[in-house]
Image (cartoon, rainbow, N blue to C red; front, side, top):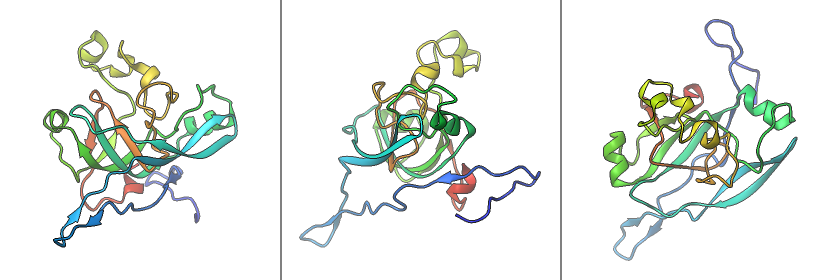
Length: 196
């Protein structure tokens, strides 16, 4: 992994986790020589099953929908919160897919979300771990972390697998995005590790 990097102000940079590297999504070659896109039905994910217990599991990828999106994870930062959940110092509702500092490329985007988020397949984005209904008082005032519909209960990389979507953390090859997700564009040419 090499020595830790430091930021410009001398702080230690966060370690970044990559699972699976670059995924080949080019698909099958058709009789006419064209390439058909293949869609994964499962995604490998590191699942926190209890303190100091991570398991590599195959999780189902949700079916395409007009109000969902599939992100191919390029990198996910390893935060102090992840370490505290792993060690058990911070109680975590398990099993869960950790990772709440996710960078990736959109592989599928439902039409409604593409318009709402102003994104397209192939865009590189960072995922805000908190979801926002956009309608409650906290969301309207900009404190979406206190959303009355979501908050910590549905936060990506912090919620258990019994809260939809199950594939909701960055320690996986893919990350399913719900309609109330918030995305931040990541410029082309930016290394995904640096973007975390």
